[in-house]
Length: 258
Length: 333
Image 1 (cartoon, chains in turn red, orange):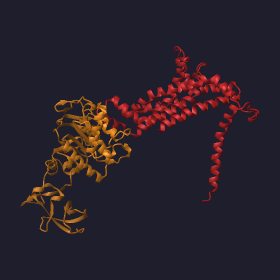
Image 2: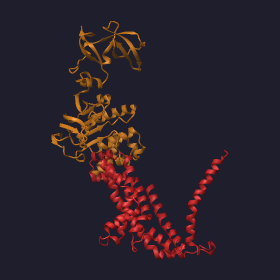
Image 3: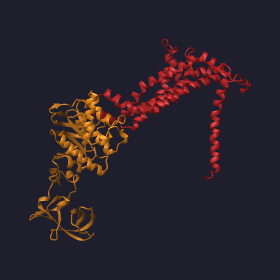
Image 4: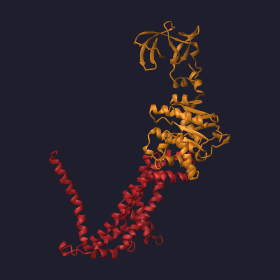
């Protein structure tokens, strides 16, 4: 076997160090969520008490977050896919400007966007206290990710010629859109969906300002738990978050690969 | 269905940025003929095809007529014309069968009838073995066969082909050209073929429309276009053309005072007693013939010879050109 040089071992050591740096806190936090008393350490024994307490107090935030993420996905699909299609077809400078402007909500701090939404819509019926208020913020923030993913796919395939081919075979605009455009956008739509759901689930900045005590999302509840309850409960919350979101993301990934 | 006759009336095309792609064009495409639009890129040939297909609208005042019926406002999906593209434009989300049957599916043809028709098309294009392949598993030549099958499956009133062989390598181009020719003759469908390749145009076209800078330079049968070019552009674009100053004497062309005369390389004979003297500037042995560049007192003449001997550079040579094969152009200065 070839003798490995010093640089190999240095690199390996560095890689392991970085991994440990990232993974150890996650493991610690998860362990903290199931230890009886974190101050005493693991010797105090394990318990599911904290997890149960989180579930009792915060399960609504979990389901709300999943609900908002899925609603957000629906909105970005309905708005974003046709928008990307239209932008890819339009050659004008105006379309390019729109494409750039779409990423503004990502560049602008979430707090600023949230403030603008509150200032504008505070007095609009029950909108301020509804979960749809948070949804609007999330759609604003995640839409560019959907549009960009679909645009990336559209820039690779010659959709215009494909559509012309379909039209020459008698397909109307609606038939072309559903039989040719959408199926060929699929990789972009799936990649975008994954981004949108992930971002919406974890969004905190904006949601922190947009939420009301009755419309807390998972990350907001998490901050709540960290701030006002004991460390074990906060950690148990992280654990629940992890257990809920990882299968969801893996499921979406598998769907995207198929 | 009887073949479709197409007429273009004052069809011009100006793009939004002001570029004039096509000057007003009047053209009659006869039912069942294969008409080839030939010209360099940017000459307006593809624009003309797209106007016929319904992918572009002519400028105001232009009309497209199918069998006398004005279809200028009819969108492409209702014109029932088959389109074959240089880039094939096959749907990557469907297999070969799905692509060929697409037009039938759109028209709501029953699954059984569709399947039978697809099989028939695949057999006609000799690609039965590829029926269940994905598009990305096909070679360029196979893709173009699928594209042809797809366009013909719906029994279009006319078949429009936009540089269908340009993306293929030379050998494949030759085989597919022969196949397309046989196919068009057999089906008797009105076909419009766009190409920049003069060999393709000559081989396939009943008539050729030579285009240059958005204008029609000449319309005619391949022989007319080759032997009696109407303009200097046509003369130079199709085949190789020699030019020498001179006149006809005793049934032969002689250099000297006179008009500028044009002649093809293959009509030049090498003759010991030929009236035109020159020296060999370069000679290329191409197997079936030798292409000789002859320097005739400062002007270059290209000659094709089937003689087996070698032509040494700098050797004197004498040429003779039959009077019947020299031509003059009206617009030659």
